[in-house]
Image (cartoon, rainbow, N blue to C red):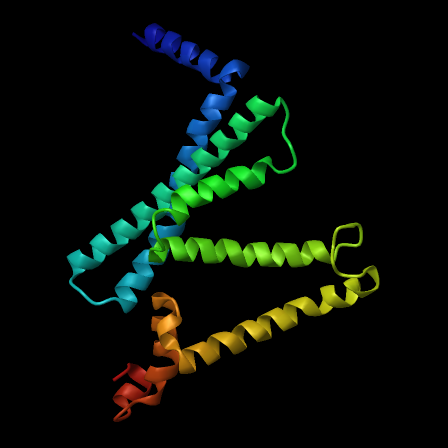
Length: 216
């Protein structure tokens, strides 16, 4: 019996390690990694945020955690699969990878997974996270001394690089506080809920008990 199992394992390893099967198996592993990573990222976040800030029964909250985790894991896994498939397809058509293959694959995958299915709260959070990282990445790229395509003049790059983060941080907080004060309805619900807890609920109390122990 053990010899049979060992033979099966050897045969499977031969298939897995065969370079001819690498591209197809990379699609499978990309899907797997997207699902696993999406679950790891979303589950603890959803668990904390939903149980602390959402109303409903214990069962309802568990269901919300499950749905948010499932959505994040499914969408991230699907995107990785589509992105890698798009890269593979373009490489097959062009015989080599071009500079913009990743852009095209990301564009199509992003539309199919995150754009076509509407702006759910999970999709919004993922896309906003990615957008923020893209903006920061482009800002860093524009100030690199050796990057010839930057619109920032070479003489300004050191100064811009040294001051970009303080400006970005202060302007971000300025705008979010302005929006929360005058147009709270346009702020993403989970952020609005957090800000309400911090800035609105701290304005109300009727005694020592709910001044420091908990909110009214």
